[in-house]
Amino acid sequence: MTKGKVYFVGAGPGDVGLITVKGQKEIEKADVILYDRLLNPKLLEAATLDCELIYCGTPYADGISQGNINELLGSKALAGHRVVRLKGGDPAVFGRVGEEAESLKAQGIPFEVIPGVTSSIAASMYAGVPVTHRDYGRSFAMVTGHDQTKKDIDWNGLVNSIDTVAFYMGVANLPYIRENLINHGKPGNTPALVIQWGTYGRQETVEGTLDDIVEKVSGRSLSNPAITLVGDIISLRGKLQWFEKKPLYGQRFLVARTGTAKSSLAETLHELGGDVIEFPKWNAAKVEIEESQLISFLSYDRILFTSPESVHGFLDSLTEHAIDFRRISSKLYVISRKSKKALQQRGLMAELKSEMPEAGTLLVIGDRNKDQRDPAHGEGDYFQTITKFVDGRFLEILPRMLDGKAVGTVLFSNQHSVDMLLEYGKQADVDIEGLLNHASIGVIGESTGKRLKDYGFKVDMMPEEPSVEQLVALIVNRNGF
Image (cartoon, rainbow, N blue to C red; front, side, top):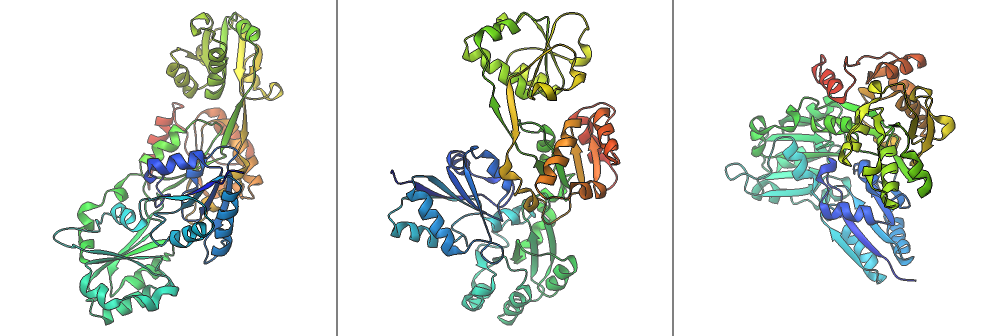
C-alpha cells in the first residue's frame, strides 16, 4: 500500500476568512482531518463527504492524549491516507507541531507544515492593538501562560528587553503573571488587555493595567481561550479599534439552513461583525435522468424550480447530455430569490411563483421525494433532480459550536428551515426548544412565522418585504443592536 502524507495546517484564530489559501486547499483534499477545539468548526465544511473527521479536543481537558494523537497520525498515514492535522492559530506557535512531526519522522512518514495566522497577533489587531509600533513597541514576545511552563519563563528578560508581551491561555494564571511582571520591575500602571475568543464575533475584551487587570477579568468571568497582552502599545486601542465598532459585534446568531449553497444571510451577518452558527449542514447528490426524459421536460409550458439545488441539478443534467439550454421554450418560475439568482448565473431568466399564470402545463422540479413535495407548489407533474441530506458528522459538532456565549437571535428563511432545525437539533442532543424560548426569533415570510407559531414560539422580527436585506435591516436597527 502506498504510504500517505501528513499536512500540519494552521486554521487561524477563529474568523474563517483568516485561513490561508494553501491551508484551505488541503482541507478540501484531505482523507482524514484531526482537529482541535480552538478552531472554527465551519472550516470543516470544506472537507469532502467521505473525509473522516476526528475531534482531538484539548490535551488539558476533554481531548485525546498527545501520545494517542501521534499514534493516530502515523496509523492513518501508513494506511495510505492524506491526513490533515488542523490546529487553531499557527501549528508552530504552542501547537506541538515539533513533537508530532518528530514522531512522523521516526516512522519515515512524509509531512508538510502550512503556517497559519497566529492568535496573539490576529486577536490583538481585532481588538485595535498592533503588536509593534515604532513609537510604542519595537519588540514583541509570545509566551505560554500554562501552569506547566511557569518555572521556565525568563521574567527579567521579558521586563527589561521586550516592549510588548502576549501570554497564550494565561487567564487562570493571570495573578501569577501580574505578580512576576511587577516584582521584576514592570510598573503597575503598564496597560494590559485580555482578549477572549479573539477574531470571533463573540470576542470579548477587558482593558486595564497590571494593577487592576486581574480584578477586572474576574468581574467579567472571562476564561480561556484568551490572549493577555501587556505593554504601552495598548494605549493605541482607542484610536485603532475597528472590529468592535461593527454594528453586530457581540451578537451571536443561529441561522437555520435548508440548502447546500452559501447563506447570503449568514455571510451578511458575519460581515457586520456577528458571530454566526449555521445548522444543519447539507450535502447533495444528483438524481440520474435519461436523455429522453430530459427532452420531454422541455415541452412543458411552465417549469417551477423549488430551490437553487434543483436548478443546478436540472441544468447540470442538460449539460451532461449535451442538450442546448436554448431548447428550453418553457417559461421559468422560482419559489425564492436564491433560485432566481441561480438561474441568472446560468444565463436564464425566471419570475417568482407569484407571477406564474394558472394556464398551461406545469412541471415542478424539486429536491425532495415526490411524497414530500409541498402542495403549495402547484398541481403539475413533479420531478426530483437532486437529493439533499444532512451531514451527520456535524451533529456531534453542533453542541461544541454552541458552547460559550448564548445565542441571542435565531433566524429562519422558510418554513422548512423550522422543521429541519427542530428535527436535527434533537438528533444532535441540543435543546433547540429551550434555545428558541430564550432567543429572539426572526423570519422571512408569513408562512415561516406561522410555522413557528404553530410550534408555540413567538416571532420577534418579520420584514414587510420577505428578503434577506429587509431582515438584516431589522436586526441592525433593533434596540440594543
